[in-house]
Amino acid sequence: MSLVKARIQGNATVVTIPKSFNVKPGTEFRFKKGKNGTLILSPSKKVPDTMEELFKNWHGKYQTPDDLKDWDNAKPVGEELW
Image (cartoon, rainbow, N blue to C red; front, side, top):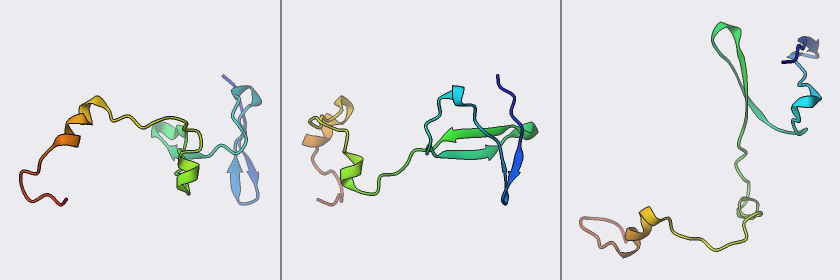
């Protein structure tokens, strides 16, 4: 556990994250105030801006999950759009 002190910087109150926590600079967080004044920081998941960005680290073939394979051969039973 580390002890840090809040300070004013411009128009904000700032708390630093100790370097020993290995937080990558530029990491975006969701911030909320919990019960009893607890402050909670959670890394946010950035939504990709482009399809290229979405798949930039993917080098494989799409495989349909087992629980969805039946959908490939499903026949319409009502007024589905095809």
